[in-house]
Length: 437
Image 1 (cartoon, helix red, strand yellow):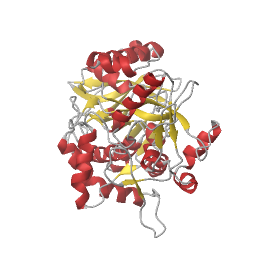
Image 2: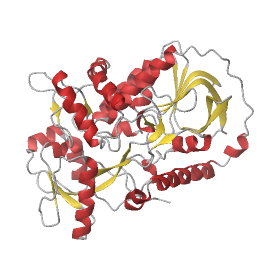
Image 3: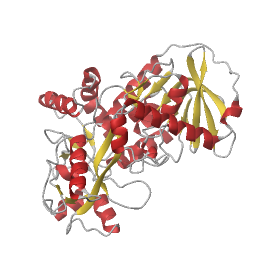
Image 4: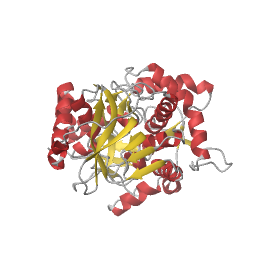
């Protein structure tokens, strides 16, 4: 690994990959990931990606996003995301992404909770996998991008109040400094801190701890979305998400007596809260999700991954309800950033789930996450491309000894983030944070 780059991008979800694709080809780019490239939460996204249908859909889409976010959304960010959506979808299709189509060849749209109409594009029930893998294929074609897996970013490097690199521990090697004119954090969320989460376990909010350590502003780190429906299990590990689009297509939530108890198409936080309340009322560990209003052909065509996973767990969704429970899913808060990823520290950017640019407000509308990541990653790359910063980066004296005990450093990181969540919202912490410790 060389010591000097134009741009270091940390994270290989759609935000990190799209940033690399949109950066000028004359920039020397280092793309780092803590695990394997495709072990990212973008890859796991099932439901789909939103898009503006036409100009008549602008106000409804805007209102749906604002309502889900409890009107705490940044309206400029919401407008930018919606306005760029059709262009981004066209770009994805041009890069090989295969969205599901109707018999006549037109794009097929689905609907999820909080949406007033069908405006979500999908690839069966593995949309994230389709988009992430195709973007990764395009990144691998870029001669200016070097990809490093199993490279843990432990800290940033600062010089004259400017971010100028990162401290990286690659595989079994000692931590070392790597310098760059710009650093982009696209590290995802913090699901690895929770007992029940749809996230990969290694996604533990490292960038937020780094921000806390270095005085980089966070915003609403306690705005954490609980997904209403994951497949209930007593086993340890990541929970399997049952896409919201299942409910959009007609699946119903039932209590222990087989009775419906909530409107399944309400925003996620409301549905999750209703499930939690019903579980307490019934004194059960889960509720039931019934697919009987969806045809078997539709299940096999639209939700084959969910069908097969449930079958592996002993449930045939075409014949019986499945047990579901809420789990941590997504972070709306994060490193404070604008719609171009600019943070409070010069030349440090944050995009995707890592950033809080205000687009989601207090609660994310279903299937806005992939679109948000792509929109503001594109904006971020554009800013970096036009940045005329020409100051030479000089090596900084760094005490690398403090990074020697990696396990201790990461343990301290987790405590920093958890304490920040609790400080911001103790009620949420006590209600939902079944923490590993």
